[in-house]
Image (cartoon, rainbow, N blue to C red; front, side, top):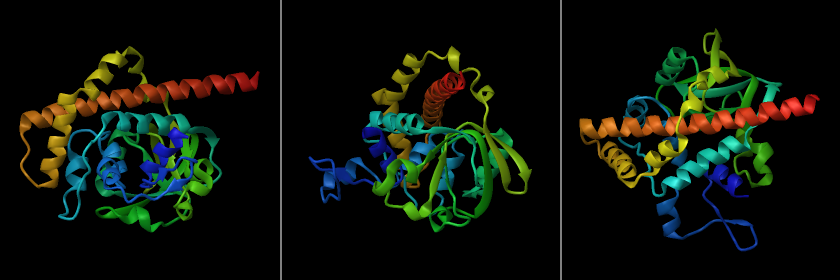
Length: 266
């Protein structure tokens, strides 16, 4: 149940469970201090290289980013989404995503999605238009790790009308035509992962000094204040460590799915 609750939180649903396991809304102000309906903004932002996504998300005066209150919650959210994903050989229908031109340019440059991609089975969905200069892209999926929100959350999913599909990070995106891509998992993108000292990397990610620096960056971005170059350097190093951690758990999930398929074929 915990994994599904982290998945709900990722979608912006911050309801709690009562003693009987039922979801309830809460008026507890402490809940809103520790949880945020826009937490997915930073969980994805952290996976983008450099500072482009940070500046893009705060370029308008009414845009703000939530701080990290508990770094282990951040890691549990990543772990939960990855572990809940299913491997699909070929998805029956195309899905759609609204994205910024800056992100599309980056994807074209990298050849893969650097973060979780929230998409919809609907051709147009107003939720995904909340971006600067939004552009609609079409995605054809095969051999991919995805999360089908309605399938996993069932009647606990408060946004069933969105018909949301999440594509896990680091999938190869091949251009078919203008704003249309084929999506496929390519473990070559993760080929250096097995050499990582994952325990050392995780220690650096959760280190209090590093998390405090992350929150300092977020607070200064929210206040539209100038950033210190040395703090930005440390922040980007922290993001690189976090990205390595995500790559590690993603490769582990892919390997498990590959072994499961082999066993099914015997």
